[in-house]
Amino acid sequence: MPDVTVHHPATSPARHATSYRMNARNRAWLARRNLPRILIPANLAVWILLTLWRFRGLKVLLTSLAGFREGLRTNCGTRTPMSWRTIAQLTLAGRPPVF
Image (cartoon, rainbow, N blue to C red):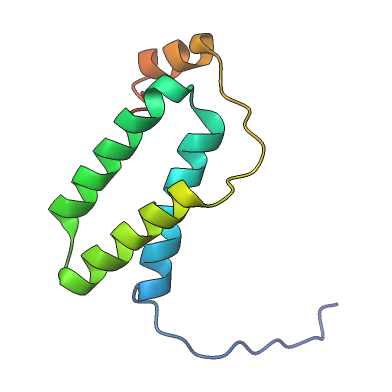
């Protein structure tokens, strides 16, 4: 309907604690759902190291680590790991699932 006007509440575009926690939790869930079990620790270790390298303060770091912990402890949904052929194709394309 072209005559409808929608107003969204003004919010800050800056990252906030919830976004850091959810981002980390979702990374853990994504790895647990879609990677072969042998690659999950490597994938999460890389993301944790990147988080440690990028963090913008102790509060952000602790929030992100809490998100990773939540992602490891809670239900991630149905596991449907990708095939090794898909992993090889991703790697050859320059997007290995571990990094």
